Image (cartoon, rainbow, N blue to C red; front, side, top):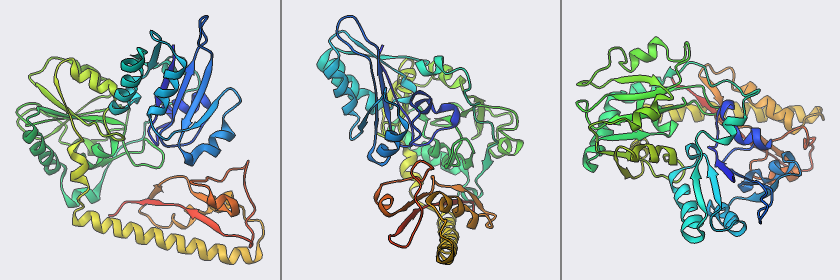
Length: 405
C-alpha cells in the first residue's frame, strides 16, 4: 500500500495528521507519501512535499527517515510515483482530504498513462493508527457574527445562492469550504487556530419546498448554543420556510447517499476551496453531479457597507497596535540588548489585548532579524532564535482579527 494525503492551511489539533505522521508543523498544502517495500521492485520511502515557505522548517523538524521536496505542482507527486511504481501497483489515499481537481490529475497521470491504480481508503490509514494521545475533536461554542447580520441577514444570502442554483437547474448545493459556510449563515467558530471558523458541512436546497438547509456539525455539549439555534431558526425546522436543520457531523455522508427527489447536486471544483473526492463519490451514487466553483465565492467578495466599515476599523485598530509595538521596541532596544526574535513575537499581541474586539492573531507572528528577514514566512523558534542588534533590519509580519460591534 502506498499512501499520501493533502491538508488545508490550518486544521484543528484533532486533524493534524501530517504533524502526527512526520513531526512537521508547517501550514499550507503539503503532501506525504509512504511506500512499503515489496519482494519485486518497490523500496521503502517516506517523502514530504511542501511549498518554499516551509522548506527550512521542514528540514529542521523531519528526521533522517524522510526525504524533503519542494511542492510546485500537485502533479509532482503523481510523477514521482509513476517513476517508481509499475503497472498494476496500487496507491491508496484518503479521499476526504484530497480535492477533486488533484485527485483527477493524479488519476490521469498514474492510471491512464501508467496503469497504476489510485484507490480510495476511507477511513484513512492514519485515522486507524492514530488512537493514542490524539487530541479531542473541537468543542468550543460557535457564535453569531454580528457585523454580517447588520449588513445582510443569512436568509437573504441563502436566497441569493438559490437564484444561482435555479439558473444552473440544480436541486442542491454542497458546501465544504468553512469560510463559505460561515459567511452564508453569519456564524463563526473557534475550531481552528488563526481562523474563526466552524468545522462543518452544509447542504442548501434549491427551494424550501424541496428540503431544508442542513448544517452538519459535531454537536458536543454547549457547542451549538440556544442563541445559535434561534439565529438559524433551527427549532421545528420544516419545509416551506427558510430554516436550518442542525444534524450530527457524521450524518452528512449518510444523507448524501440516501435516495431523494433531487436529481442534480452542485459541488465546487475550485482547486483550493472545492469539494473532496469523497464528497464527489457520495453525491455520484444518487445524483447527477454539477461541478463548478461555488456561487458563494463571488457573492462574498462583494462587501456591503457594514463589512467595509468593519474592515476599515480592523485595519485601524491593528495599525495602531503595530505602531505602539514599534515605538516600544525602538525605546527598548536603545537600552536593553536582550531582545530576541521570539521575545518580540511574544510581545506583539500584548498591544492588541486592550482592544475588546480583538479575537485572535491571523497567523503565527513572523519576526526575522538579519538573514532571517529574507526567509519567506520565517517563524522564530528556540532552535534558530537570533539576538536583535543594530547592524541589520527586523522584519515583522503579523496580523490580528477583530469583531466589530
